Amino acid sequence: MNKKVAIVIPCRNEEKYIGLCLDSILAQDYPQELLEVFVCDGKSTDKTIEIVNGYAALHKNIHYLLNEKQTTPFALNLGIRKSDADVKVILGAHSELYPDYVSNCIRAFDMEENIGCTGGIIENVYENEASEIIGKAMSSGFGVGNAHFRTGAKDGLVDTVAFGAYKKEVFEKIGYFDEELVRNQDDEFNYRLLKSGFRIYLFRAIRCKYYVRASFQKLFKQYFQYGYWKVYVGKKHKAVTTTRQMIPLFFVLYLFLGAVCAVFNRYLCIAYLAGLLVYLLAACYSAVRISSGFVQALQVMRCFFILHFSYGWGYLKGIIHFLLLGRSVATDELITR
Image 1: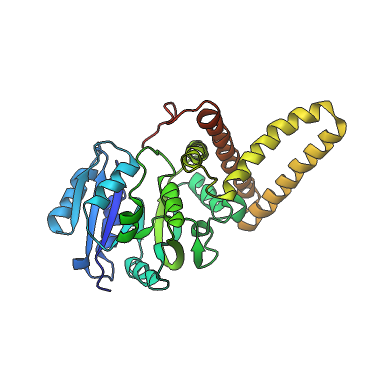
Image 2: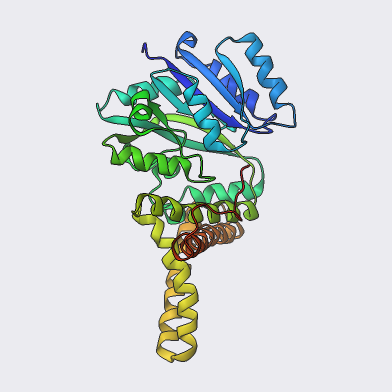
């Protein structure tokens, strides 16, 4: 319990949440003298800077850093490089930690010597109806596959976690977050971590709340980018980083190519419609299990489709841009905040 821990928080215009986040860090059962916090702000135009500086004036372990480039990976690297802590935790400004969050991160590292990263379970706090629907869909294995940090399935070794805590040795060995990536920077970093011999451990005792205010339009945009940038990551490493990333691509190809084939052949049309029916039945079964009523189940099914189609469509566009057209970095999909 004598390890020094740094918490890095990228943020921009988070006046509503940053105080809750910092309060939860100050309420940790881990010694505050071993905790330091770096809020890396991307030139906020609301009261975020004023709030953070207010906390910094009262608590010497809280620091404000200006994120000139206003991108997430730059913010992460800015905070990480400022600290020589033994463990560095990546955190979202919408998060509120349980009091034993940091201490459980330290406990997790003691379970296996080669664990380089650990994380836990996100408990969504829904602030509007759309976010509740989206949260339910993303807590379903049908919606997000084996992303255990969302489904909370089990403790154990995984390929990624949300808001990871990393040993200092990881950065010393594999470097920092890729600042070219608008999305998937943590996914790409964790891929390098695993390739270097470290392991990622999901420990369900590590818990935080995450305040979700969302829309279906934003969800489509977000998952389109995840799929799109996944191709760039794969091209950079000359590998498919996870097998589950291919399933939405196959889904989109099935929708389009299957529809074309169905026009020209009766039997292919029957097979195509049968495949769609199987998908709808699986989506319906999964939605009904987690919904409070028929109307909500229909909305969750809609969300399933958005998750799968937007990721697959983004992946397909990424293949066209990065693999077929040979682009190194996209110029038309850069959304930094």
